[in-house]
Length: 178
Image (cartoon, rainbow, N blue to C red):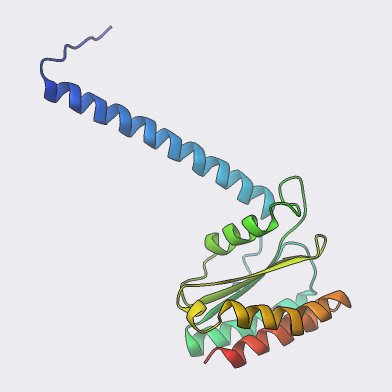
């Protein structure tokens, strides 16, 4: 067994700092592990072929996802504005009580940036959230996003026309985002 003797206040201070660092690192590791587990449970599908649409709930057809991903990719290449559409699956983790929190976490977790927009919804929960980056929110304000949601996207979603709701909503965001 190795033992050591603390000879000075400096040694005791260093030991406290090292102990604090180890404890702090352990807490961060534990927190990141929990976050990862939540993300892993919610986002299980392998959607590598798409960059701008993540349809975990399988709401859209493959041809629609191809078309939408191409539209969003072209828009990003022309404007440097990233739009991501994600559908999340209701499960033991994602429910009506924490949808907004998880949608926001997803937006932060996704590869959107400060000049981006993330549309996250869950068909099963009948919930949707628009998340904007810091630069984007100066143009697409909460009022504008809310108007597009209530006047364009949600009426079509209520008719189970998710495809038109997303396309018309994105077109309206594009029109407002100049």
